[in-house]
Length: 433
Image (cartoon, rainbow, N blue to C red; front, side, top):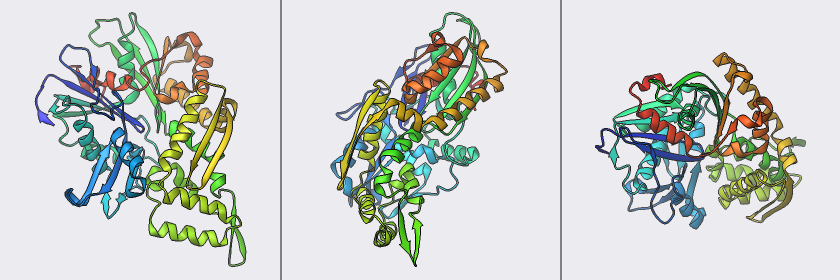
């Protein structure tokens, strides 16, 4: 970024699935950054990267991001490496680097490259450096044992040099600031942000319009369960049994269960995207020779060899979105010799994610407790994030707080909008995490 526009603030919602940016000038309402070009999808920029070999490029490797990454991958799936949801490993000590062909890229390397491409596709709107950049971060990072200090170090390295001032704010607080602009009277609000990797909650006291300090955070809580986990539940029921999960193989006269680690890889981009390597493929070839159902292992090998991770998850995502508005949907996936057809009801999906929903509801209780309020003290509930559209999630809040208190809108853009507004505040430290 060039230095300039000293009065501007940039709000950046760097999301697990999608990223959104908003710019706000001094005293002006924030405006979403619309990306430019044939592949552009409005203000939403997919959090994805695609790499391919290019002898003329620096280091022999070319890359694209966002919808351009998806297009490049779909055109040449076998000659590229596609990575999405890399934010989900920000706090993971087990993740050291991604092996892309013969290069090893750390989290911050991926992040800087992603930011570079995001700026390049902004139609010039992000070429100059704003005075402040306010980056959203989850309340609770994704992963089994997330390390927030490690995530902060990686974020710092990722955003180093990106802006004059870098501030981090909890994502639901950004959404709260955006929603507060709609209110005309004081209220205690609960903001629930359901993203791809995490579900985060904030309780905020909103003062009268024109007050010196419009919003006061009271409490927060979060959990590393959200849309990606729901996607994996669908995979686990509809796809993984066809790839050998639950099956067995013979080894040295014993019948053993096929290692579950292979199937866990299908729920983690950092492993699934990189399974097409000689060691893994040799392991699967040996596993096939002893499998009681070798055809299932053949199908798993075909999914990996043909780089079918993206179309597989795309089919899962379409099913999930359809079941958010319909009671029944048809699942279809075909590729690499594997074809799956299934009719799925909304009730079935809700039974698959019931345990996850119960854990999410328990975190809502933690958020209320951290704020020192009870459900009856909440005047409004604002739901945001793509997974907030799932009916079972909305029922949780309707049952706890009353359907009449629930508000929604800007599911993919409210966080960035609010972060830019926070960037206009005189004392941003009151919001920084």
